[in-house]
Image (cartoon, rainbow, N blue to C red; front, side, top):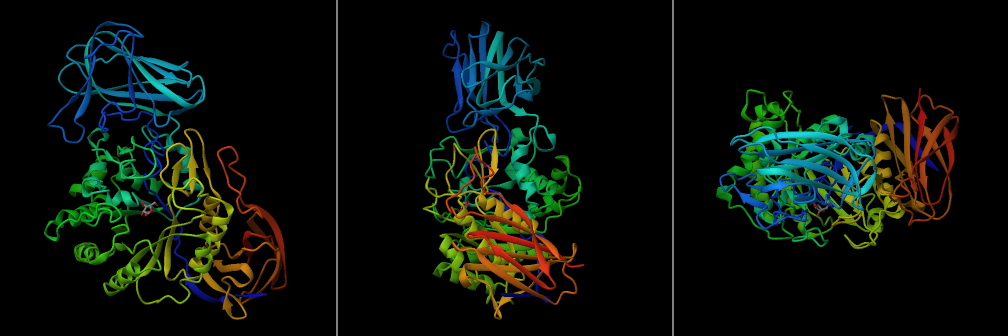
Amino acid sequence: KFTVNGAQVKAQVNQHMYGVFFEDINMGADGGIYAELIKNRSFEFYKPLMGWKKEGDKIAEGDILVLNRTNHEANPRFLRVKTQSASKGNIGLTNEGFRGMGIKKDLKYDFSVMYRQSTPGLSLRLELLDGKDNIIGTATLKPEKSGEDWHKQGVSFVSSATELKGKFRIWFEGSGSIDLDMISLFPTDTWKNRPGGMRADMVQLLADMKPGFIRFPGGCIVEGHDLETRYQWKKTVGPIEDRQLIVNRWNTEFAHRLTPDYYQTFGLGFFEYFQLAEDIGAEAMPILNCGMACQFNTSELVPMEDMEQYVQDALDLIEFANGPVSSKWGKVRSDMGHPAPFNLKMLGVGNENWGPQYVERLKLFQTAIKAKYPNIKLIYSSGTDPNGAKFDYLNGELRKLNVDIIDEHYYRSPEWFLENAARYDSYDRNGPKVFAGEYAAQSDRIASTKNENNWKTALAEASFLTGLERNADVVRLASYAPLFAHVDGWQWTPDMIWVDNLHAYGTPNYQIQKLYSLNKGTDVISLTENGKAVSGQDGMYASATLDKNKNELIIKISNYSDKAKDVEFAIEGLKKLASKGTNTFIASENLDKENTIENPKNVVPMEQSIKASGKKIKTSLAPYSFNVLRFKTN
Ligand code: AHR
């Protein structure tokens, strides 16, 4: 028997509390949400022709060369193709895509290329191929302009078939010499039909969650394996051919899965992240490097006397997001098509950094940013071991600094999540707020093939989240991590959304995050059993909110046990309670149950109608279930 008291308001729920953590890990960006189909389009990977294969019965040494403009830092390499009287089949190139190319029947594809030539001569015969080399789309592009300058030209064509692992081939026809760069192929069914945009099915899964914020660009890629490969936002804005790619920190060089071809081309850069956030009604939450490379890797540090550039990058980012068009960085934003400010409100400095080196660097950021932008909330990281000494040290130091928000990460067992559901019940209310910035229950070792996104982990997270919600005055933000993973190219498990080249599905963990985000309510109210918060008694975990906009009572309760539970809620402090409400629930006695590409809806919420009599709600909770009860209160 539980008591819910609508007159005892404990906290206001941040309407942006439940968000998403985006990192280019597991082919989340290149080969994932960024819809470019050509891998290594500008030949800047460590091996210039990675992803490409020379083709043809007449191809000779020197017909296709990689050249390097030493005066062009961002995009030095290009191809030179030189040949006499070539025809189809003689000289060509095939691109393998990112684990193949996902191609859809009857969809239009946009091909484009940058080129220069002294006189028009060669033309490009384009062929989209299925897995067996059958042609499923074709076009010809005849570069028209000549001279020393680079030009861009494109052509579109329609695919005649659907293919999960397509390829793209270019045959050169005619005679002459031509330089080529930024060879690109995009589907036209991108999110909001933006040319060169994002995969709509992946963005839609995010939009469906109505996330309160998007944290980007990571994660460890913020820090970099070393400082050279840290994320630098200024290199990710402006014309895409001028964005300087870097090796991804999750490339096999540095991570444990086989992805030697993993680079960040930055077609998805900071402008696109801000725009995505705006599109789906989420607050942007950029995280910047704090002058330290990943401490799990090289631990490189920027000397204190050289920190100015890093702090300036943070100040400039705020100007890029919010500054007037007349400002230097506001103009860059405007030139990219967004004169209105993005209205950035928060900024993270550092990811999973620790020690006195982190604290002293933070002080520089804190002083400079608060002096110029006092309203920007700053988020600092407290590391990965929520019960460890490093964490305690850092939390203590951050509290002394009276920081706005501390970012806590927990990749722990399902049992840890259950045991820690009451983690914030007795948390100090006077200091910094908490951002549960990365969490995921682990059924096995991180990145093992056995580490599953199963119902057990999702239900443990759902139970834990009752504790975050109950303490919504302290825990202001929460996001599961990582967000995306490609079935053929991942470095980390578990992940919230899995994709192949054509499909995307939400895991049970996604379904839980979505239920919380869509049912957050506005005010946390008291829900007790014998005067105590419900956090593990008899395997149950619960929280309650009111939605004052919709006049509804929302009760979330998980039953983490193998027995059905008859429960009764006595509702106090509310004038009215409708006699009929709903229970949106997920239940499975099989804790190993998962969603898959083939069966994406194995574990999804169902809805049933439930009754209240007077001010009492009685219902039965299925074994191993998470339930969201909603009743009108007017
Ligand atoms: O989410 C995967 C990684 O986990 C992130 O990059 C890092 O912040 C954490 O260690």
